Length: 491
Image: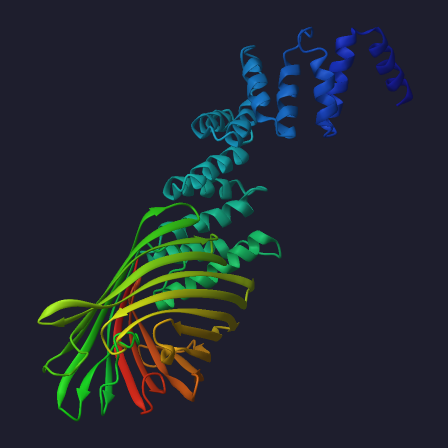
């Protein structure tokens, strides 16, 4: 070793200075000292007879994150028409980092055809299409990467699963294949945890028909049945009902429809346009505040992480109520502004906060002429126990009216909802309850309701709902039973 070292030293001593610096640059690049390598090569690049110094310089710039310079130098290296074709891969990486995806894919394909860094080039080609949300095009690249069975196969399984999930919401077979790929991603790192979350989301989607991915359409239509000795509904209480007044033997009813459409969608942000319609119909005249209808117009913005482990949103809508008593007459309106967040703390626990603010203006109806405002503070805690979920929601509603102090009140309440993982015939059950005090200047009213909600999957993205709730204290002191059926479609 001493003799070889001596010969090497004597060779360097008699060599051209640029040869010495070139060999030094090779050593620096090999040791990952790219900043020093750049300084060394910049001294000789215009004097050295060997074009490989441009290759070394381009790789060094790429590793340092100066991809603009890397592309410039590697393009210069390409003009020498050398036998070293490795530069295509490194050129592709820098073009990718600069967002020049078409050029990057062209370089990666050249690298593949030449048999140089095939696994890496294939993976990055797939990742480019994935970044562009072209999941069908990206998927075959990830499958080819998996077949290489190298260091990128782990990531390729994950992204192949995501491609199948994103493109397979209408195909149970694609979702099964996605689970297969996610199950190959194991461990304690972030990617493995994300894969586990995807498996949970897919299982939830298949069982309930509810997707956590972007909702372009969300349609709800339902009717509730209310059996009460006296009709107690006001235009502002929000109770949707259909039933029979046993004093006058008059059939009355409320039907409700609400839809949301997102014409603008980005990777993590969606803008929704909302519209709702309700009608309060009495099939016999003379019932006072019956025959009302409501319209809701709104816009909302949602931000969410890829798996909806974090969501934030803001919504504005205007609600108008009309009384149809021969001619259509506006009786109430409300501006509503709401903000909220939901954050997964652990796999089995999430927190949420919602702050709806309402500004009312009434010109008729059950409450007469009034203006008012309310703010609702709702803190939600979600707990998952295996396949069962449990939601605790304490909230405070404060209402004040400038024109009618008798309407001022506070409502302290707490809600509980539990979703169960087993079926009752075709249904998946949920139990829900809410209790609290409505406090005014001169009295306290105990308000509570509780009951069961049953969901039945009707196909991918569709589900039906049955609910039965006993209620007291919200709009009357009599015990009321609210029951209803509903339908939801999510695309």
